[in-house]
Length: 150
Image (cartoon, rainbow, N blue to C red; front, side):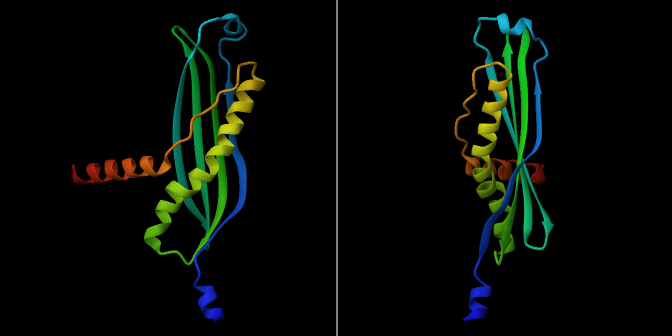
């Protein structure tokens, strides 16, 4: 019985933390006098790596840029990271866990950090829409496969 318990898959969150945080308001104070609605652009990047036996760090970087036609209002970059314990999981399942499950856990924390940081800079909070990390992961895999065949 104890041998069977040892072979049970393990997935747990050990720690979630802000790994890096940056905010730039390059055109302050004039930008605060603008009445136009900025165009908001969001970029995502995620990477996972093993940090110890059974422990992985996943870092999700969210970059949000607000631009007016001729100037940048702000640039906010947040890297939210987590340490996850993953054991007794087939090797082929590790990558999807690091690329889909972990970013899904980290994104709400990153979204809240971005919103708070932008608000503290004197702008209305930015509310980022939910992300389908499974679709992003599948798209990246397809691009990697295509690049490998080229």
